[in-house]
Length: 479
Image (cartoon, rainbow, N blue to C red; front, top):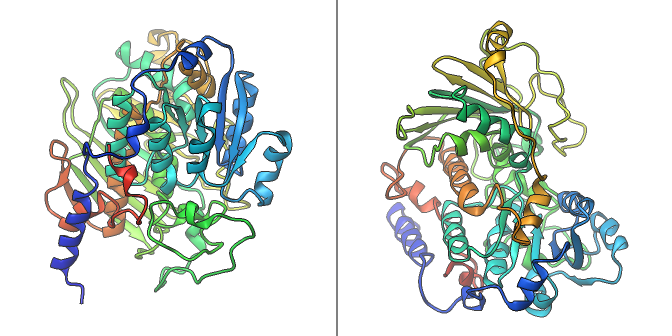
């Protein structure tokens, strides 16, 4: 019988095994400096890139990178190469090397590419990124950066050990107008003394049709022909194949995804978190949620994140709202919420539109700012106040490069990435803490210095995901 005491002992032992160490592991393959070939290639106008994940979001990333004119495609990798979602990309490059297992890509074709673009399920982000850095490759990694707090900690440390490698997380708004506007407005003293932020994503999600009375994970189904399910699972504990995990459905499950918070938080809260220097919260409280269960994300949830003072900046409370029936309170003068072309489709099919678009409301001591998601710019509300402030607003510089160009130019040594692991990793950790509060349906107190919860041992066990990595995948968790 598994008792609470035995569970916590097991989890503590598992987490201890994930700590940084100097034992031989995956990082032993990493060069300390760029090779002469890489230095030569960095002076060229194109970067040799291997793409991991080429269907759905992977196809979109592939097309965005091709549009830059700065990419030479040298390899394609996907666990489901026979799937219809991969055929468009495969047909464009029928002669490049193909792999189903990313480990074989690095082992057999590492000399063919300088950089990796990975658009895969959240749970497999970490081992791919670790292997890329270990093999001396630049990496563009879709958001959210990782699925667990500890994975973010390890990836940030790994990236700091390899400053010669460019890392970029795929929250593309970090290279668009909102990034440069927020920075300029803060430097001009327009955005200052922020005390509260409301963040919201109230569109329909995949799991809203699931049964919250669920008692077990989905039943096993026949595996699609040619699919490498073992590699798809990665370090996660074994799950039988189900179509309810594939083709984006993985985002619904705690075991594989990060829900609405991890998916959209990276697009809504990225500039707030970076430019307000928020770091990690001291409290994460699940204020309410609907359809709580042990397996998939709630239909709706409200999460309070409390951040302490930083230098001369006051404490900040961020309240996150998701779910169709969980709209945030709106301030006077908010106005309407028209469709914004800067916010991409949620990729959920024909689903009901929310009454307000994904976005944020920023409250400072003197002003209120209304903002959207991704690259959408802020506006001051109400309109009367905006007119009064108009003459004081600074000119906002234009972005010198979009997110993909920024990454490629960084690979060439010409720019620095705007959303590297060292910056985005802490934001990703904030989301990991929020997901833990969702899973446990409770109030949590967190010590940003020790990076431990102070009031809940179960929550500390979940910092590393709850269970050790599956046999054969432990090496990725050693530096």
